[in-house]
Image (cartoon, rainbow, N blue to C red; front, side, top):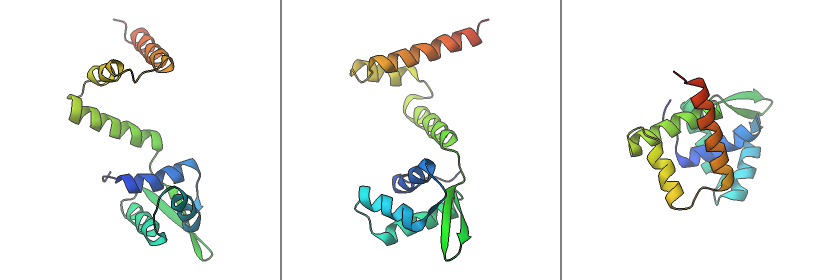
Length: 125
Protein backbone atom coordinates (compact mmCIF):
# COMPACT_ATOMS: atom_id res chain seq x y z
CA UNK A 1 0.00 0.00 0.00
CA UNK A 2 1.30 3.41 -0.93
CA UNK A 3 1.82 5.98 1.78
CA UNK A 4 -1.20 8.08 2.63
CA UNK A 5 -0.71 11.71 3.67
CA UNK A 6 -2.50 13.29 6.63
CA UNK A 7 -4.74 15.25 4.25
CA UNK A 8 -5.64 12.08 2.36
CA UNK A 9 -6.32 10.36 5.67
CA UNK A 10 -8.89 13.08 6.46
CA UNK A 11 -10.76 12.05 3.31
CA UNK A 12 -10.49 8.36 4.18
CA UNK A 13 -11.83 9.01 7.69
CA UNK A 14 -14.92 10.62 6.18
CA UNK A 15 -15.46 7.61 3.92
CA UNK A 16 -14.81 5.12 6.73
CA UNK A 17 -17.55 6.81 8.75
CA UNK A 18 -20.09 6.51 5.95
CA UNK A 19 -19.87 5.34 2.38
CA UNK A 20 -20.47 5.52 -0.44
CA UNK A 21 -20.45 9.31 -0.60
CA UNK A 22 -20.43 11.70 -3.50
CA UNK A 23 -17.60 14.16 -3.99
CA UNK A 24 -20.01 16.94 -2.99
CA UNK A 25 -20.78 15.20 0.31
CA UNK A 26 -17.09 14.68 1.10
CA UNK A 27 -16.33 18.28 0.13
CA UNK A 28 -19.14 19.57 2.34
CA UNK A 29 -17.86 17.70 5.38
CA UNK A 30 -14.20 18.56 4.88
CA UNK A 31 -14.79 22.23 4.13
CA UNK A 32 -16.58 22.51 7.49
CA UNK A 33 -13.67 21.03 9.45
CA UNK A 34 -10.76 22.28 7.32
CA UNK A 35 -10.09 25.52 5.52
CA UNK A 36 -9.83 23.72 2.18
CA UNK A 37 -11.05 24.67 -1.27
CA UNK A 38 -13.29 22.33 -3.24
CA UNK A 39 -10.48 21.66 -5.75
CA UNK A 40 -8.20 20.53 -2.92
CA UNK A 41 -10.68 17.86 -1.84
CA UNK A 42 -11.18 16.70 -5.45
CA UNK A 43 -7.40 16.43 -5.83
CA UNK A 44 -7.22 14.34 -2.66
CA UNK A 45 -10.01 12.06 -3.90
CA UNK A 46 -8.17 11.56 -7.21
CA UNK A 47 -4.90 10.79 -5.42
CA UNK A 48 -6.61 8.19 -3.25
CA UNK A 49 -8.17 6.59 -6.33
CA UNK A 50 -4.73 6.41 -8.00
CA UNK A 51 -3.29 4.84 -4.83
CA UNK A 52 -6.17 2.35 -4.89
CA UNK A 53 -7.16 3.37 -1.37
CA UNK A 54 -10.66 4.34 -2.53
CA UNK A 55 -12.81 3.38 -5.47
CA UNK A 56 -15.75 5.00 -7.16
CA UNK A 57 -18.92 4.11 -8.95
CA UNK A 58 -20.50 6.43 -11.45
CA UNK A 59 -24.11 7.19 -10.67
CA UNK A 60 -25.73 9.52 -13.13
CA UNK A 61 -23.55 12.61 -13.38
CA UNK A 62 -21.75 12.06 -10.10
CA UNK A 63 -19.29 9.62 -8.61
CA UNK A 64 -19.82 7.75 -5.36
CA UNK A 65 -16.62 7.06 -3.44
CA UNK A 66 -15.94 4.17 -1.05
CA UNK A 67 -12.83 2.99 0.76
CA UNK A 68 -11.03 -0.02 -0.69
CA UNK A 69 -8.84 -0.47 2.36
CA UNK A 70 -10.14 -1.55 5.74
CA UNK A 71 -9.75 1.00 8.53
CA UNK A 72 -8.60 -1.56 11.12
CA UNK A 73 -6.04 -3.07 8.75
CA UNK A 74 -4.70 0.37 7.86
CA UNK A 75 -4.46 1.40 11.52
CA UNK A 76 -2.66 -1.83 12.40
CA UNK A 77 -0.16 -1.40 9.56
CA UNK A 78 0.53 2.21 10.51
CA UNK A 79 0.82 1.34 14.21
CA UNK A 80 3.31 -1.42 13.49
CA UNK A 81 5.32 0.89 11.26
CA UNK A 82 5.34 3.64 13.89
CA UNK A 83 6.41 1.30 16.69
CA UNK A 84 9.09 -0.27 14.51
CA UNK A 85 10.55 3.10 13.47
CA UNK A 86 10.47 4.81 16.86
CA UNK A 87 10.78 1.97 19.36
CA UNK A 88 12.57 -0.81 17.44
CA UNK A 89 9.38 -2.83 17.43
CA UNK A 90 8.87 -2.74 21.21
CA UNK A 91 5.57 -1.60 22.66
CA UNK A 92 6.60 -1.33 26.31
CA UNK A 93 8.63 1.91 25.90
CA UNK A 94 5.67 3.54 24.15
CA UNK A 95 3.22 2.64 26.93
CA UNK A 96 5.79 3.51 29.62
CA UNK A 97 6.25 6.94 28.08
CA UNK A 98 2.50 7.59 28.24
CA UNK A 99 2.34 6.29 31.81
CA UNK A 100 5.21 8.55 32.93
CA UNK A 101 3.50 11.59 31.40
CA UNK A 102 0.17 10.67 33.08
CA UNK A 103 -1.44 10.27 29.66
CA UNK A 104 -3.13 6.99 30.63
CA UNK A 105 -6.51 7.08 32.34
CA UNK A 106 -8.22 4.33 34.32
CA UNK A 107 -10.05 3.05 31.23
CA UNK A 108 -6.77 2.81 29.28
CA UNK A 109 -5.16 0.84 32.12
CA UNK A 110 -8.16 -1.49 32.39
CA UNK A 111 -8.12 -2.15 28.62
CA UNK A 112 -4.37 -2.79 28.66
CA UNK A 113 -4.76 -5.15 31.63
CA UNK A 114 -7.52 -7.04 29.82
CA UNK A 115 -5.32 -7.38 26.72
CA UNK A 116 -2.42 -8.64 28.83
CA UNK A 117 -4.67 -11.13 30.67
CA UNK A 118 -6.06 -12.44 27.37
CA UNK A 119 -2.56 -12.72 25.88
CA UNK A 120 -1.32 -14.64 28.94
CA UNK A 121 -4.21 -17.11 28.76
CA UNK A 122 -3.67 -17.69 25.03
CA UNK A 123 0.11 -18.02 25.29
CA UNK A 124 0.52 -20.27 28.30
CA UNK A 125 3.34 -22.68 27.74
